[in-house]
Image: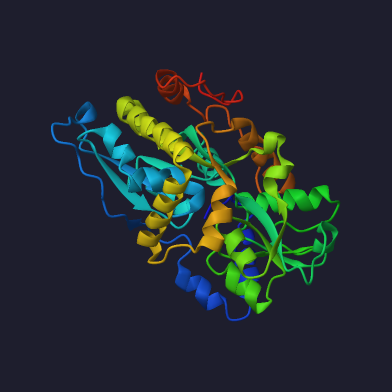
Length: 376
């Protein structure tokens, strides 16, 4: 799940957990889900081509991502061996994560070198390290977030007032977006406790469908495929977050790298980015094959593939992209500041898009912009 901006007051996390614990019979389930748990090593599937050489003499590059559809580039690139093809004899070693904080910790400890991750943990990790631990080096996905509600209880957007709406985690990307939407509606909610004109109930995406079925929540502002799972349970999507953004585009997943790894192994980083760009093109050229590939990867991760009534609409609502949509990340940070979940951050230098733009130029594609937040 996309992880969170950390609230400036330490009580926020405890209050958020208390809010989730208020759900009948779900507190134990949440604990067993291991939100933020240690990563599980993915099985290495791609074989190194005969005669291939190591890039910069490096034996392996450690890549992290979530087993989510919003990480489709990484899912498909791993499943189809597209990253390994670009890396030659430098082995791609994959690790899957359940939450952003654990992936940031892995990056900081050098357990991974490069990761697919949401904008909120990227901002949080960068600001907490005073700009010293990571860079965002590329985009991966836009969209794929919806407000899904019980149509018997909520007929219109105005009916959301007074209802219980789930978000994945205190201060995570969707939580910040929902709090900002509430503020723009003129309603008031205490960001940390979630109490106010709307009850914001922080709930792990894994158990949100069960919370919806039990009636513990009246709806949820969530990413795919959770949104489509709720629709399959009888929910109705009454708002697509993409409709709130210019050109209906906003960053939901980007690519980060350890600054030390970028400095020491720039050609390996370029190879991974080249794999990402080629994977995104393959997804665009082969949408049905790519959807099946992503579902096969999800089945390997969870033991169960998504049914057609979930994966089909979920897949359509997510756009893979090389562009990190930097201006929208800056806006998301502003939303968190307005909600009181983040002190005004200095994001200068969070991006280094020079390696990506070099790859894009070689592929005959247009360069992407860092919105003034790149390294000098």
